[in-house]
Length: 113
Image 1 (cartoon, rainbow, N blue to C red):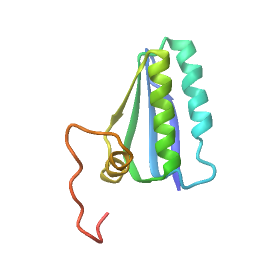
Image 2 (image 1 turned 60 degrees about the horizontal axis):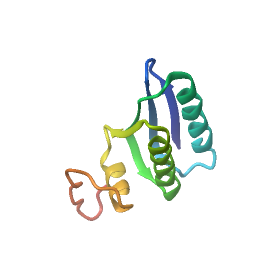
Image 3 (image 1 turned 60 degrees about the vertical axis):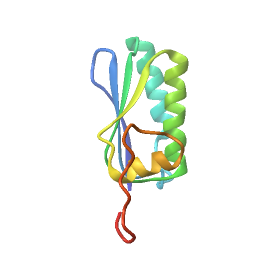
Image 4 (image 1 turned 180 degrees about the vertical axis):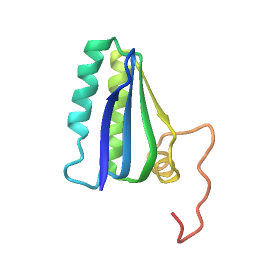
């Protein structure tokens, strides 16, 4: 089970919380999450979207595409999208799909997540 939740923190910043095996549930709300970000962008003159991934245990290609869509939307609309509290599994999935970090994720021995 996974969750995608967009939270308006007030001001010009919102937080998108991802948790669980993101992208595995057919009901993952990627479309509605983007729609909510767009709605808040129009209301708040958005400066920053923070994607909190501290509770992510895995990510599918659909989850990675969601992050790409959110980042592209930010570039087009003039706000920053950043990743925060990235769990090990999220870090490895993002890195495996072409994003680079200042510090690479550690190598995980076989059999460990």
